[in-house]
Amino acid sequence: MSGVVVSQNEVLFERAQKTIPGGVNSPVRAFRSVGGTPRFFKRANGPYVWDADDKRYIDYIGSWGPAVLGHAHPEVIKAVQDAAVGGLSFGAPTEGEIVMAETLCEMLPSMEQVRLVSSGTEATMSAIRLARGFTGRDTIVKFEGCYHGHADSLLVKAGSGLLTFGNPTSAGVPEDFAKHTRVLDYNNVEQLHELFKASGSSIACVIVEPVAGNMNLIRPSHEFLNTLRELCTQHGAVLIFDEVMTGFRVGPQGVQGVYGITPDLTTLGKIIGGGMPMGAFGGRKDIMACIAPLGPVYQAGTLSGNPVAVAAGLTTMCLLKQEGFYQTLEAQTRKLVEAFNQVAYAHGETFCADSIGGMFGIYFSEKVPTTFAEVSASNRDRFNKFFHAMLDAGVYLAPSAYEAGFVSVTHDDAVIEATKVAIDRAFAAIK
Ligand code: PMP
Image (cartoon, rainbow, N blue to C red; front, side, top):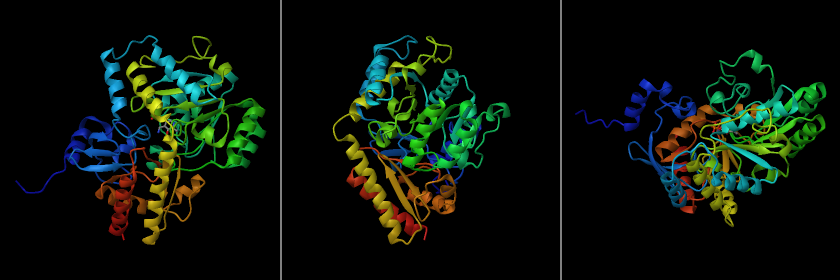
């Protein structure tokens, strides 16, 4: 016995890499850009996660968004257990799916009809195909640094893991596909006018993260979203709000409610599945009527509307509809941002933080970025050091300077205060 304690995370990571590429089933989990060993989790409860060494962390990823109620909410777990007993999957319609669709359409006024799928990727991929089928046009427009899942046409100058690993356009996407994807700068209204003027009649759709969360958190200007709405209407293009991340995260009606803009289609994921695999896309009834079996645009899924996922999602939606839910979520997220800003200031760090609803961004830059170029100019080395110091101090942040963070309603004042102490320790440690 050497007396050196080996972390179970390291043991598992080494083992994982033998049979799983990079040891992970989704790239950002591998800690590649921040270095070090990813934490393998055993369990989670409320605002906490426990790793393979039984070390507890305050979690600000929340499974990348879904855990808005905190992990393992007892009512959600009970609903899942009850549903599982009744059968895991039928591949046939259920009443639960109707209630889910009714709930989504009731909460999002822009959504007249909706179809359930099993991930955010499926939602955006299907929405793009639908927009193309509806308009009979090929060109799609997206924004640099926005991530919309991993369908071919969307992996062009994308955010999230693609940005983190410095490879924003994926290999394996034929040029013949990529050439139909036009990429513009987020928050750049002039470019929008120019593109629509030059080729408005060939644009099938614009897909946008209406608040960006895959190049860190970037707010849209009102002018940017309003211009998008106006130009799409003028030119007959479909406006798709990708609210996979922001839906029921920034407020009860997503970004469309906060900014008062009605998209033609909305894509959802994360929170609506309550931690189980679920996505959805929906919107205008005349557009949704193009989907099979009603129309010629094909879309399907063996596990779509899965009864266990629907049970988790519906229970989650029920709980977040409760009075005061979003006030609490927003207030706790603001307190976290204030804690970050105050402690950073006391340490003389070049740092700022921002939040909207239950999502936040931390930036090693003087002011909150509003463009992809500004966020790219922030100090990523400093972020990486801070990330590890926070991990040592028992706080689990997203392992990339290009990701937003997520708070749950179980992040109460005591948890935020404990986080503040950890932030102080972390800044002291990297002095
Ligand atoms: N759109 C956005 C805005 C996302 O943030 C994500 C995932 N982070 C996706 C789509 C893809 O969702 P999924 O990972 O469930 O396929």
